[in-house]
Length: 248
Image (cartoon, rainbow, N blue to C red; front, side, top):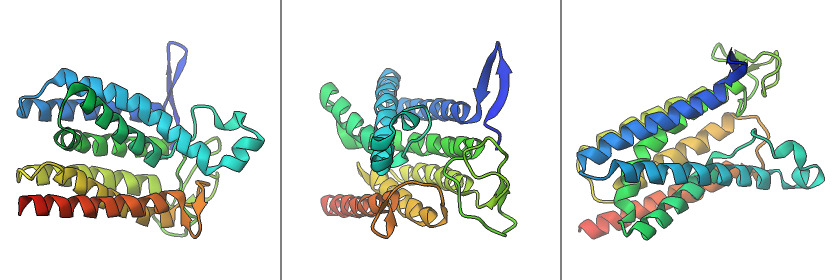
């Protein structure tokens, strides 16, 4: 859990940024391979990935600012830097970006979404490892042997044994990537991988949120991400039902 990994040519390489970069490369490699298998353009994969990353970061930052809106209004400068993102904001912005990109290119949306989502889950897994190195998205205090003590200088409280919810999420994301790839081998109908992603990721995120203890906003008794997860899971169920009816 050391965010400052090493220095090269006078520049410090940070764990979070490095893991995000590894995740993007992993997403591209996996998505290129899947595109070749389908006879689709690798250049299209690169193009939509670049746009999705840019818009995803903006969406993740925007949702983070909205979850802490009163504090941001009082003193906005501390919240406008490179720290502070909410994954769901990035996912929703990325989803909209892919839809708009497909519309512009005249391509079917659901097949392309299915193509990209395993890589998205893979990238999220590496991103969560980056969260662990930076100390953000930390869990509750615990006496469990699974607990981790973060050093001074990280975003997590130093000297307190905390649940490594970042690693729990990373493991879930990697398993989700594997599950989507296994499902894809069965040649499911268009949208099946999207439905599975929404259902599994939404449910997993809802459960992990019970273990987290970082400030992330709330809606009633639920955290902001738990509240959004309810709609993500419902959307996955609805999409799955529509696919089954179409098949019938």
